Image 1: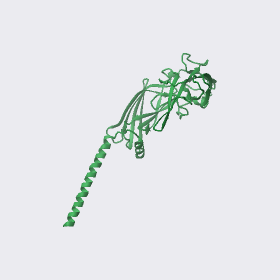
Image 2: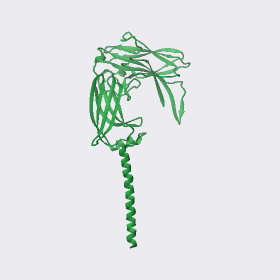
Image 3: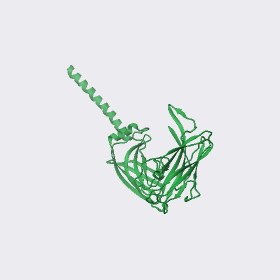
Image 4: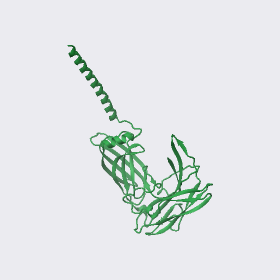
Length: 339
């Protein structure tokens, strides 16, 4: 199993990029961006570019191999997406696009490729960028991820599981054609709600979408889920200080607190707030018996609900009463035979 360590040398400002910190002793390479003439902000080390429709240019990054042997590096330009922690993430390639996406940085650049850099050498790698013919508004976010494929870090094994460190740098890329993207008012939609499982833990997942080409920050989601016919709220959950990438989806996992899923019809009431805006969503969804059994079977660390223990107690009591009745019937039959 690979443990991916990301170093963000091209730190976006707090408006664009989440904080990520790394402590790695085995790092033997570095990556730097060569900023072009159409750089909007020369005080930053990532690509912040003003572009035009159907424009072609080369983005150059310099890879420095400080090791005593040659290494291979995978170069991938990744579209910014929103991960399940509510963070803007630049480390996945080829994810499903949001329906609102108009300009995709992954289609403007080559597919992932590999370069080899000799020991104690620097190599400039050019990445061809071609913007679409149709103009867009707002901001396009992405990252150039440089991953060392043959790390010298020692591999360890635990109970037959091999662990290897894989190191990567991500150089940010922000593209804009016209206007101020910060002036765009964000809009969030809620598409669906369903029972799901994340890291072998049951969740209720609400799929949200930022349909506007601007990032969202300081997002707070407050959720209440009720079961049809029940007097009490099934789940209450609140999470804040989250972010969403421009024109991206967010599979928001709502924790069930490790309690088993119960089949039935439910209603989710969600309030999303960000930068003085409020969005209110009410969605109904169903958990089938088959879904509940399947997810409960594979979930870990489940705490049984009071209703579950009530059923268990009732089952035990019914079993005892049934046993008493059977014994009484046997005794009566024997007594009649003797008479």
